Length: 244
Ligand SMILES: [Zn+2]
Image 1 (cartoon, rainbow, N blue to C red):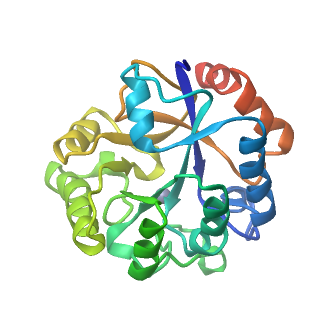
Image 2 (cartoon, rainbow, N blue to C red):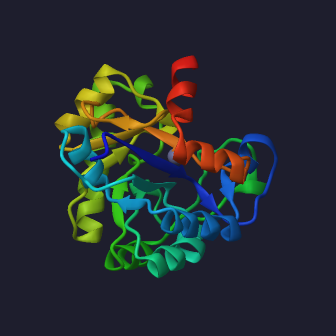
Image 3 (cartoon, helix red, strand yellow):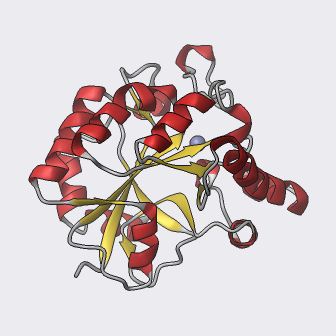
């Protein structure tokens, strides 16, 4: 049995716009499809976030597990990633910002040129019907460690309630905006009833890890095929994690 897994962190699936960090949030639809195809060809098992939580408890979730997560709930997920995930019958988790459903990523401060629309409620519902899990990315995408205890609770618990009401399904997984979390944030996530929380800390997930501070592997525009294979097949992510 495998004692570690990878959680891939994607943001925007589309033609890259902007420069620098903004551009790096994109993976082109063509490359995304190749990556999904490679997982299948190389015998990786794409698992759910529930499976990742099971792995942290030492349960067997099959060989070579990889989970797919998509931050922010962009409409380009619906347009470009969903059809590919359906084709390969892969589960995935989308983290939606509950106050911004149907709007755009206005929290990005780099101007309008690279803004991308977020999925509408019907699109999120459709994703759910195809087996995509909708998790919470808070209500308004703030830096959680800077909030008062009341606002922190509201961002985590309030977004869970809002998503559950709007989508008619339980919301059990969350993702901290900017990966910004500390002990108080993790306690608030547990208090709000989440069974997992993902960060932007890199590294593999291992048996015994805290499921509320899960490490992920950022797949971005700069992730060339060589780096993609290194991350999948070696301890590269854990070595990088130790150095950072
Ligand atoms: Zn985000």
